[in-house]
Image (tube, rainbow, N blue to C red; front, side, top):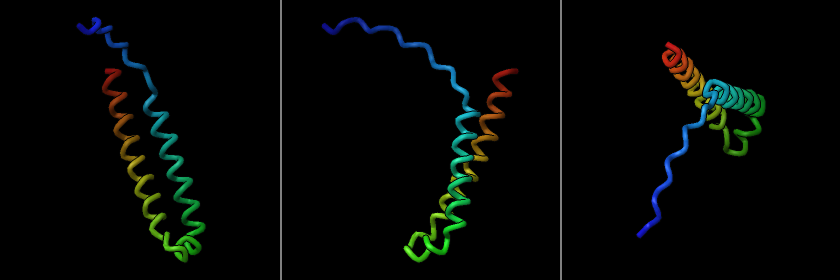
Length: 76
């Protein structure tokens, strides 16, 4: 017979806005870096990295809007 199950721990409180902002800024830095070095990256067959960084940055902005609206709704 298996031992009795312990209760689940309480969920951790996290600052989702801070996490999303840090990730979005990281994608922005990657976008700037890949834009600066675009010619060298394109010569190596990695020219699409600019678009990948742009997509990451734009998705970060969408996520930031989402977590800000979620936080506002939770405070109401």
